[in-house]
Length: 506
Image 1 (cartoon, rainbow, N blue to C red):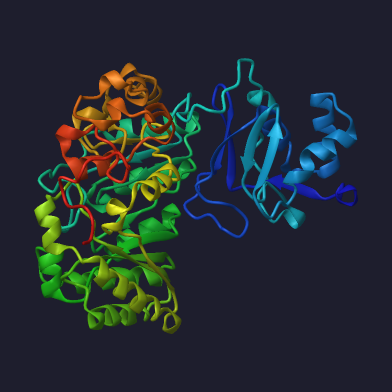
Image 2 (cartoon, rainbow, N blue to C red; image 1 turned 45 degrees about the horizontal axis):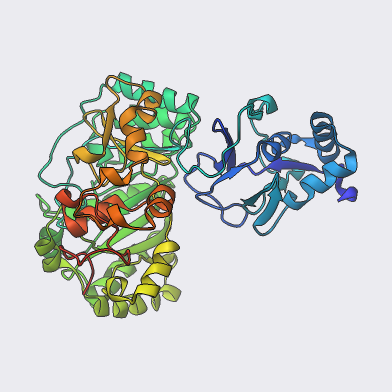
C-alpha cells in the first residue's frame, strides 16, 4: 500500500453516506443502474462514524497520502495507524468484516476505488464534521431515525389496461389529487433529507398529464426513477424522455396474441400490440434501453407463443433483458380469481427450463422470477424456521414509505389505502413530520398488547426478535389471511395457521 501513496482513490460513487442521528448509513447512491462489477446494489448498512469520516476524505481529487494525512490529523493517530485503519477498504474485491469499538461491522465490496485518469467524477464535497455524532451510538435499531431512504410515489390508479393479475385494487380508478407544485416541494424535501431513492411505482406514469414536469424535476434533483409502462407512447413522448435524460425504461408485453391480450390485459381497443411494438421502435430509434416484463398466466404460457414473442423482441437492438414473472395472488384479486389464471408449479418448472434454454439464441438476457409453491408452507418445522429466520428485512416503515395519489402515506406500495398502515398525508404535513409521527412510530414498535388474541404472534416467544428486527411482509399476511387478520404471522412462519386464501402455484 505504501507504494500507492501518490494514487488517487475515491469513495465508490455508487455508495452514499448519510447521517442518521446515532449512526451513519452506508447505502447506494441515487442511481437506477448499479454496475455490479464495481459495486453492490441495494446496500443498506450502518457503519461507525469513524469509518464514515475517513471515507469522506476520498473525494477523487486527493492522493492517498493526502487522505491519510487528514485521517491522522482528525483522529490524532500515527500515519502507520491510519494506513492500517484504511487498508482493508482499498479496492476490496469482497465484502469486509471489521470489529471496531466492540461492534462487528460488514462493508460491501469496493469501498475505495482507484480514480486514475479521473475515471469517475469527483464526489460532491462532504464535510466530515457532518458525520461527527455526539450522542450514544446505536447500530441495532433497524428503523431509520431521520427519515426514509426510499420514497415511492403513486401518481394515479388509472391504466391503459385492466390486467387480471394487477396488484392494484382494480376497482379504484383515480387521477392524482396532489398539485404538481406540492409534488415538486416533496422532491426538494426528499433531497434535503438525503433520501436515496424517489421512485414512481404502481402507476401508469404516462397517463399523468404532467408526467414530463415530474420526471424532469426528479432527474434535476439527482433521482433516476425506474419507469415502467403498458401504455403505447408516441415518438414525441420518447423524445421528451431522452431530452430529460432517461436512458432506460421497462415495457410490459405479455403476449403477441390479441385474443390472449383481451383476456389477460382486458385491452379496450384493436391494434394495441402493434402500437406497443411501435413504441419499442421509437425507443430503439432514440437509443433508450428497454427491459421487457412478461407476466405469465395460464392464458399465455404455450411454448410456441413464448418463442414467437422472444424472436420478435430479438429484432430490436436496445433490449437488455426479458423477465418472466409468474402471476401472483395480489390484494387486487380474490383467491378464486387467482386460481382461475395461475400456472401450477410443475408447469412453471418446465417453462423455466424451456425459457432459459432459448437464451443462447438471443441477443439479450433472460430472467425468470421466483414463485411460491406449496413446499413453502408444508415443510417441516425446522426447515420453515430456518428459512424464516434467514428472510430479508421488510423495508416498510423501516426505510421506505409510499405516497398515494390523494396525498395519504402508507408504509408499502402494495398496501394502498388499508387504514391499518396509513401514517399521514403530505398535503398537510412534511415527509419528516410523517416519518416521526406518533402513528408511524407506533406501527414500527408494536407490542404484544396491540395484537388480537386470534394472532399467534401475541404469545410467541420469538415476538421481539421477529417483529422488531426483520418484521413481516404485511402484504403477504393480508393476501394469505385477509384484512381482518392483518396482525397474523407471515404465512411461511412455522407458527402461522393454515392459509385462508390461495397464494401459491399448486
